[in-house]
Image (tube, rainbow, N blue to C red; front, top):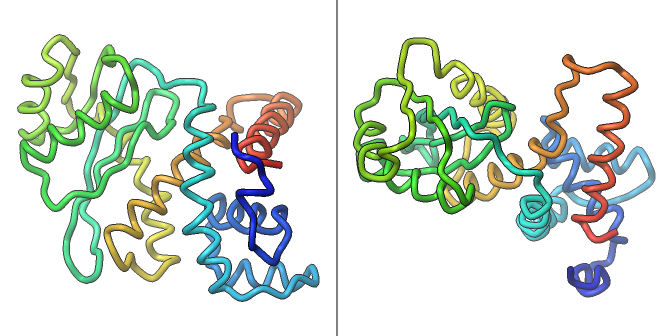
Length: 232
């Protein structure tokens, strides 16, 4: 890992403030103006524009480190695509999650045809490393094309309701989309959602499935991993 002093060189604010602002933005449904107010309440005067620049610069660096520290994905991928309006034009947001709800990958594309499906499957194989045991999709024919050409030995389930997990996984994105008053560019969407996915995976602790004591222990481990990733 690079020396934290080099990572934050030439920045007027201490690293801990930058790290906290970036964490707030990607962890919660807050605007950069909201974070400006939260910091101001603590006596830290920083503009929302500075926070935006911090998120753009440091968010991808943090997410890259978090992905290296990720414990690994499961053997079943739930894949789905939804349309998003970006700069007034319709695009498609492809997403894959595993059986634990962790986001394997998210990718914005112009289309949802066979070529687009194959492009996304190739990204999945590259990020995952191994073939999944099973993929679960809806009945979009593009998935069948990509499955036959790239994952012929993988079980493909496209039965009704089987893909509810992937469809539900889009909800946080829709919430953020409304909070950000629509996405402005494909680059912005891809950058934000890639970082958001890494932070989400780290704090996806299954709170409703474990005891309060166990959850606090898991949360403490997540904070320790975050601290290592941001260079504290």
